[in-house]
Image (tube, rainbow, N blue to C red; front, side):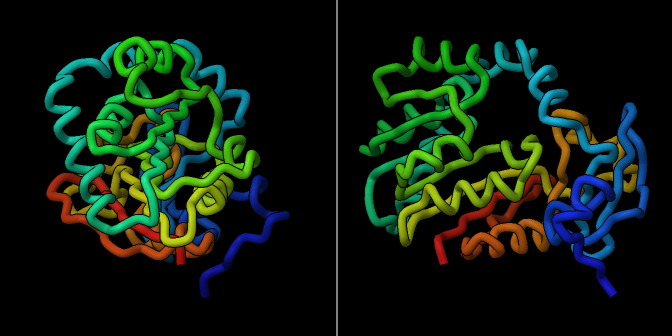
Length: 252
């Protein structure tokens, strides 16, 4: 029988960020973190779970930010394709939000496709680059999804590329996304797929296992359950040959 964690238990015992089941099956270790797989949905989480303060310190002057401008042309091309996938799902309007926008490729792509785009990120250095490179394509704010949701603003399309595996609280993150989406809105989320058949048997050797950058390695089942708890209905898991997950969901 699967034991679902209560709010009182969460924070004191390791638990799955996908299905909320208690987790104890250790499948490896990376640096100082144990890797625990959920026997219910297959999602993998790290233990100990870092505090918000520890993560904020880690992401100060994030060392990868300067690399994001490489392969600019191919990244813009890929971004436009992803925007068009969302548009083809017939969202109710043209308001577009990129959560974790980094240096702004998706904002430029959204602008090129005729959308009204806002990019948010907690990395001020990345936003400075975005403003310099793609400042005419949209607007940018240094704010979290949770903070933005409290303003009452809503969007017809929300994109989060390789963000959810980083966040300290996936539950509050997805709750914020749900609140930010208009009825009929589209959510496109990508993440490493911790249950993909091409993930190495020695899980810790997988290149995506880089705690505390990546904290949760969702399975499709775990991702679906997380989204559905917040009234987001998965419409499609895109085929991914590499061990990554691309999910298109709508408000239920």
